Amino acid sequence: MSDAQVDLAVTVGKIRMRNPIATASGCSGYGEELAAFYDLGLLGAIVTKSITLEPRDGHPPPRLVETRAGMLNAIGLANVGLEAFLAEKLPALARYDVPVIVNVAGATRDEYVRVARALDAAEGVAGIELNVSCPNVKEGGIEFGVDPKTLGGLVEAVRREVARATLIVKLSPNVTDIAVVARAAVDAGADALSLINTLRGMAIDPWTGRPRLSNVTGGLSGPAIKPVALWMVRRVWQEVASERGVAILGLGGIQFVEDVIEFLRAGATAVAVGTANFVNPETGRTLAEGLGEALRRLGCASPLDLVGRLEVT
Image (cartoon, rainbow, N blue to C red; front, top):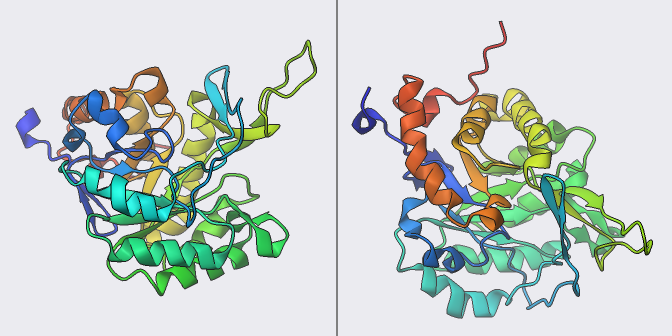
């Protein structure tokens, strides 16, 4: 099979991607930051950092710490806010032939709804990804994504406002059973799911006894969490996504083409590259360009030929 016979295109919700490689929220800013390294049109989609209703400065430094095979971050959702994003950041992405998915965060259900409503009406937004690992201040600080009832209520409220863009829910791994919250998100109207978000962790300076992050704890990402991410993608695909026809955007430690193949076999339709961009900003392009050859070697005409195909006998 020649490369010309391999069709890399996939669909996540209503988003037609030329290949299954996207950026992960928070690891390439507002998208344009990677444009200095390659043509963003080579990617399947750009996922922006989290956008909130009002601008946020985030946590003070230090807010990034390298760990063995990973990275801890406690950025604190620093961003320019909805108004500046719509006026400055989103128009800049229009020059690139790539679908734009905007990650949305908030402290209350109303904040999510207001941001999602504005983005759904904005030209150039193909998808809205809900970051549900945020604390719900009206519920005592509990994360939206760890309680199925709270998550379902959030997704239902946003679903009523989002008619055009694909609605994606980004699931937190900090739960007892990720399939339970995945089902709650889909039942409430999610078009697709992305998983996993970062695992909660911390780092300590052994000599001073001080935490290495100003926020004390942060989110662990990178190759260290890949086995957990693969298992969770597999569980959600088996228990929810495959029966409901919902696409999964898989992420967590993706760096090489082999990682992409693993996530496809676990059940992901597409993948998002995050921490690897800090090691090599051209990782997305490398994966997009190398996937066709990998599929050809496997005798596959499409990434979809591998989705959920795990040989267990």
